[in-house]
Length: 79
Image 1: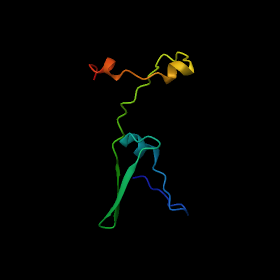
Image 2: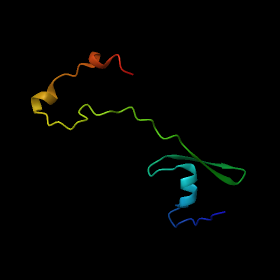
Image 3: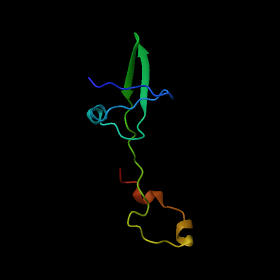
Image 4: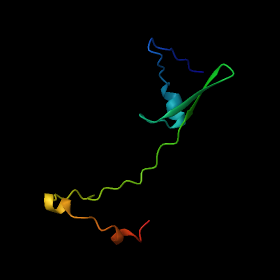
């Protein structure tokens, strides 16, 4: 079983085999609790991103083109 050392700032480093086994990524949030003198750390589910760029092809647009309203009804049938 891997061991870790608490730093002077109260920080731990999770060993790579633990991070890999849980699929943890940098920036992912973890929940920590104390249960019967044990530290329990649970990985929060990574957020599912529904964000998509409006200009995925990277076409250069003028300021006037960028200022036009977006027609959201055009993509209403997609989901």
